[in-house]
Amino acid sequence: MKKLNNATNYTIFNSIGLAIFNVIFGYVLISESAQAMRTQINERMLDISNTAAAMLDGDELAKITADDIDSPEYQKVMHTLTYFQDNIELEYIYCIMQVSEREFVFGVDPTIEDPGEFGAPIVYTEALYNASQGVAGVDDVPYEDEWGTFYSSYSPVYDSKGNVAGIVAVDFSSDWYHDKLKHLFIIVGTFLTVALVCANTLAILITRQYFRYFKTLIDKMNDLSNGVETLIEEVAFDNDSFDFPMYNDSDDARGVTDIIDYMGERLIIMQARLANQIEIIRSHAYIDGLTGMNNRTSYMEYLQILEKKMKENPEIVFSVVVFDINQLKIINDDFGHDTGDKLIIEISKDIRDVFGMSRIYRIGGDEFVAILDDPDPSEQIKVLKDIISRKNKESPIFHDPSVEVGVSVGFATYDPSEDKEYVSVFDRADNAMYADKRLFYQTHEDRRKRSK
Image 1 (cartoon, helix red, strand yellow):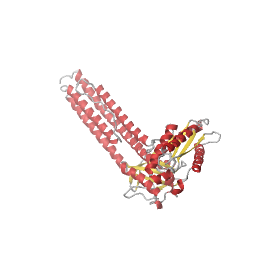
Image 2: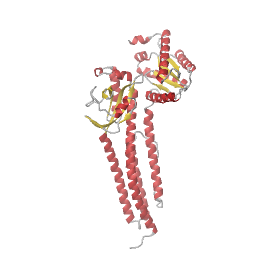
Image 3: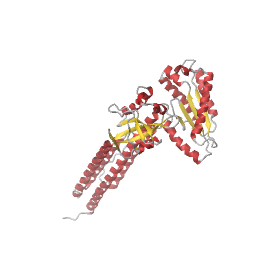
């Protein structure tokens, strides 16, 4: 047997190193991909349940009973959940009601076939209990009920006082998750097997096919990275604009280092794509769909931050401004909800123009809250009312002199000597807003009586 030359020895050594690299890379890829898939599924479920919970009225949900199936409140909740059930890929979505400390029952369930009966018991999990305490979460381990074995996410629905009035649950099948992992293992395992077989074959033919070896190796590495890209596409929720670099294999002198660098660049871009998709989904959960302002979910999260600041620094300065659109219910009844929505959008733009955008929240149908660093926003309130008054005079929105658009506003400034919690400041601002509303109806026809 002829002695192998240095080039052949170097190539065989690189082939063995590549085989070892493939095994390690495959193991890490499967482990990381499985973890990334589970994390992304959890994030997606939480985004769905958070969004659905933010769209529900906690005050109405808390009053619903099994006898209210035909009531407008029940149908409104059913319509919201049905929209998610019909338009988003998920197993089930439904409401849960708490009957005691660790006992929960079904509420509204939009499932067409075999829905959970209102009042039927729910399997208890720690994530469900945490949601009842105001902390959204996802089950760490699957649970089993009469419909199958599931992981579920749970998001609290808050009433106007900030209390948990109910819980929105979103399920996905554990069998589906394990099938996805199995599919991932088969794909990666297949590519690893192909790569190993090719590496061994190339090692045998290395003395005659040195340059062809590297060309084939590049092709196989491209196939492997394309397979990973396919896996990323399967769990992506939206199209993105990331461009993948294409490796030019026409130059047979390229080495293994170039190939590894190329693969690393592709994996970095894949991670960026996943991060981009997750960020898009998370942003949807914190923005009000009608006005583009921060929604109630964003408001509740910021309150936790603010409460912590109040405890750490009692001398913190801030004020709370509460806004409420006057006569919106009458406008909805007389002109339709589309017109009412247009009014909400118009008023929200005026509020945004005067008070900025950073900490303005829509927390109810016609109610907005601003949390400002300015201790005295009275001048800004006057500017807002002047803007709305001028619009009424210059171009009445409804062409009806008996309908004048108005916004009742009240504010309160944090006083560390009497405000131990945020809710104390909010209550004073809310009371000031209602006092302003009474003044409005002293000088304007109270058309609310027509809705009775």
